[in-house]
Image 1 (spheres, rainbow, N blue to C red):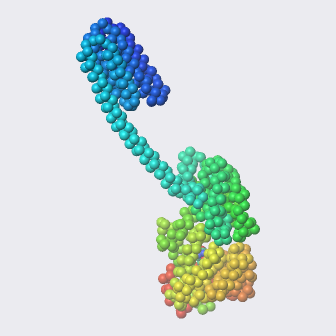
Image 2: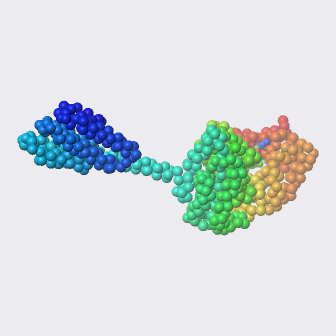
Image 3: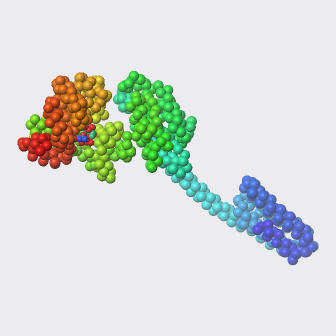
Length: 621
Ligand code: C2E
Ligand code: CA
Ligand code: CA
């Protein structure tokens, strides 16, 4: 615009000093067009603003000086004097319109004023005109310089405010980022926390659904970490976890895999993968990285004496795709297998490892919440003495509903509760139910409760049972604990000790499901049980002579070991007739009574306590 204006003022040249017009037109065109083009090119090239401002301020001055010089060469002296007043426009441009910063505006308007005064003093025209024009130049110079200063100050203030606002904005963003980092980092190890890992899982799962890019999950569990904590203290436990986290980070960062702490002594890594082999290979690398640390761990229950990890891996293509958690629970299944097989190893999920799809929806939180949500309940199944026809005892059985109110089978939820440790709370709850029943039914001699190996291995197991018995105010001898024969029971000195202590207190211990596990006989010879429950498999296969003979031999065996048998699973009357002839008189099964709620059992106790209805039933009447 300024360039155009400069050229357009050629009209004034034509009106006032026509004799100089050819020179002035050439000057205006060269300066106006040339200068503007050069500045524009420099702007496009990103030349520094200061350099541009200097050129602009000098450009205005050169435009003025050259114009003044040519104008004064005209022969019409009065016209020149008037025309010189137009030079003030250059000053206005320099100080007000060009947005120049103060020093550059001052430079160009100062030069313009000085040049005009220099010419005016040397010219020999009308002195009163000269005085008037000179003072006009000086006053305009002062006024416009002052306005420029004010304007620039204002601009500077606005600029400062904008900077301040930008700084604040940046701070807010930074604080947000910091908060986000905190909310997604595990404080102890500095790795991603569970929440962050969950969102990585979500992303990988979506990518898998949308583009078919498969992924891998590995779950890493520190072996015997509870024992490590007990032996070395929590502080060393924490630094152990931090060191393990660092080693795992080293392995993961090389491949840019996401790794985090899932909670407790469990870690997880997630990454895009193309094959199950690739997933397992990384799992093995992590295992080796941990083992290479050689952190001493003398409290382990196996021959090793340093910290190791068990790893469960899963490759997304081997898992149902309907929800992202499937991959985690598959890795969890594989982890379980890795531990079962002796720990310090990595195993990858295959379909044979899956317990059932139902158990996928079960998790520790859902099971623990069952007690507070009232989704857990107890039912009782009578154990009948057929020689007297009385209810001799009742077995307590746990029932569970899922969050939608559907019943879940104990075969499904008990293994998950054992694995996740939820069985501890659930087991304590069911014990209280059993003791409550005993307290309210003095007629009922004994109530039994199923106990998992996981509960027995808790150090304060006995004291918690004792506390429950004492709180209910019942005789300890009326409570029986059913323990299933398993590898963990036989040959374990802790179990023998535990049985001794329970014996001293007076609480009974029964061997459950006898004959199903390979350790049954060892159990029977090593440990003294008050009762031995013969698994229902034997009753149900005694319809053949071979099956009947087998059951008879088992009952003989138990009797010969000076222990009493309870025969489980009688579903028909003839089974009782046959098996009682083998020397057993305690029976349990659907034929005598299904597992029932407490109110129904009470009714049964009052009806049958003195009558012979049960005996009648036994004989199928
Ligand atoms: P279990 O200890 O052998 O319990 C007996 C199971 O046999 C019960 O199944 C019972 O309903 C079933 N049963 C009883 N009579 C008959 C019969 O005549 N025929 C047949 N076919 N079955 C009969 P349930 O309640 O489904 O429990 C299954 C298993 O879950 C139990 O086997 C036990 O190992 C476990 N369990 C149940 N409640 C608890 C508990 O409170 N704690 C623990 N740790 N385990 C429990
Ligand atoms: Ca049982
Ligand atoms: Ca049983």
